[in-house]
Length: 577
Ligand SMILES: Nc1ncnc2c1ncn2[C@@H]1O[C@H](COP(=O)(O)OP(=O)(O)OP(=O)(O)O)[C@@H](O)[C@H]1O
Image (cartoon, rainbow, N blue to C red):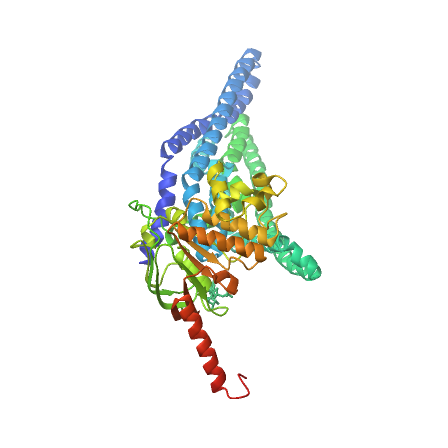
């Protein structure tokens, strides 16, 4: 099964590459003429040495020179055009996959934020970079190397043999280069990424690093990552440098050797001086693409790794099937035998939990830390898929709604609110580039955050950052609530909505919940504090991932009190120890 899945991603990449097939032909045809015109230099040499110098004809020299200028101009134009075409082919490839890769990265990050998810967008860019680089063009030129070698052999077989041997040595160097540099290049790339990640994490938590006096240790941690990345980069650059220098020196030596051998053959009257020079130039032309490929091997290696990573990512996160659009659901939630296993874990965090919520009802989900409340919130918002059981909204299981559609029906306030760089209006409108002012204000009013936002310096247009910027924790939470209510969802999932709120803030949230219920919608509130469950009609108590109690709030609370008293009585006069 894994093979079939693996091929899917690869097929998607190949299909995107195939889209530009006519352009590859175009570049190949242009390359044909560019390489043909490469013969201009050697032929000019041949004519100048053997014809002009022999006949001492200035007119021939001028005519030849004019022709050469024309031919070189043509070559320049063709070379320039093929470069531009490849640049656009690369951009087209990236455009074709941008949305798909972005989507796969987001979906993967939500459940399994591993390396594959982290590098996805960079992997795509690395392929685009290779496609628009001179190395790829060298790929179109390499087939011409044998043609040039044959042309040299026509001058004299010995020259051909020397050039061929030189070419073979260069090919061996290329293969050894690829073999030797692959592992260090991959290691170096990983180390660079790790160092960047560490720096980014420290930067984001700068306040805490400063407040807890962690600067020195944070620096040490970053230095360690940095040292590893530097070491890797140096090793990789050293290796690539060694091969580049080796190739360059060898090619220069080979060109001189060609001249030397040519001169010897001229002395033996087996070759003309023009052919001697032309042979040397042709050797350089024949071997230039190989030399270029060796010099830019890091780019090739990075793109190769990117291609493999993307194929895996796209296979493991296949495109989502089109779903038949469903009508706006009623706020009827049915959770049946729900079991959830957090991604990458073996053990279920929620086991066989069932309950129902009718329109106009609010349920408080309570339980000790780590009991599974946030896990339930993640399952209800479609972030984590059930390992068993079903969650139905108005009769349809959650996976029957597309993720974006589900996001409109189910509003979610996570435990830790983070915003995006932008205005408050953009954040409430869930990053819509043209927020609908009416809907934004309506959502803020429902969340009872309107007045609070108006008091900010630029009101709804106040710019905020991921960590809130000038906003307090409570203000962020209320903007998070407005964001959850944007677009008129039928079900609200609030994960500890008042953990950062004062009494006034808590009251605002309760008011919002009340009006939500009055409109026939339903609410789930994961809570620690009693103030948060004031508006709840039902209580669901979770312990160790299982449902410990469910029913009308007062009943469940009474049962809890009775249990507590019983435990105290059982523990004897000393109480619970
Ligand atoms: N991303 C995750 N990956 C693996 N395990 C997780 C993940 N998130 C939560 N868990 C595990 O699932 C269990 C339930 O955690 P959950 O966050 O749902 O508890 P909670 O009741 O919301 O706790 P709290 O009241 O402290 O927020 C815990 O054992 C936790 O270790």
